[in-house]
Length: 319
Image (cartoon, rainbow, N blue to C red; front, side, top):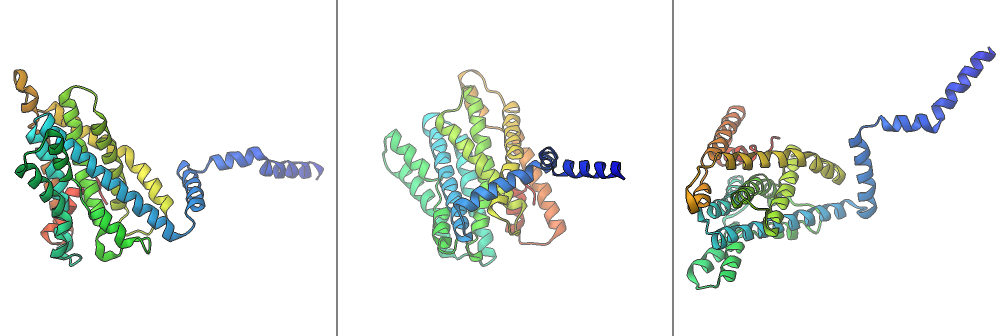
């Protein structure tokens, strides 16, 4: 009996010893530990749900606005400085098309009105009209072209939902962010990386800023799209965003590298300009788009604008 008492006392001491407790804590997953630390920090800084909602909206607005500005500067640099109208036009298209698709989808679902089309058209019309109709210096030409890639939608959504710290469902704010993040973000990053590869030199500050902001906006939108409709804490949004970053970055770098390696080569001094026209990677993206559209049409019937938008979004992220 005395031996049994000694063994039980030793076991009790082992169970309560700091070493055992450290081992048990070490067995917890890294994700849970990181989530707990993030939750503690967020709750300290932002105690109420409204504060957390406003902080998330303000971050999303700043991210999308700065992303649009840097994409505009890259677009202006490609057209005015490098004289690559094809590549610059492609960049402008991937910035404007997601906005048109999102507006069409929201209008088809009754979540917006024709009067709200000014949010999509005002800056592109103003920028292109100024660039085409006025005799401007090269600096002002770059400013006019940069304006075309900026959208006031994030600012409108921020003003709409600031009071309660969340966007009303009729604003379509989540879809604006998902479309811009998963169509405009990755496509602009691919084109910017491709342009950097063509110059055979390290990216300039404006190119690097555009790439990094596209990585961030795409990762954040991928997390929102993957967990669409789920109510989550702000800390879960942060963890989900961090988990999306490696996959998004690798996929974008892969597509940019594929575009560079499969480019049609030119001859002599015209090599770079001819290489800015790439067809193989376009075929790959269109094939992925068609596959996604066929999958969505087989799973559930929906209006064409819906499956076109979702098919394009699913090239980078799946729900």
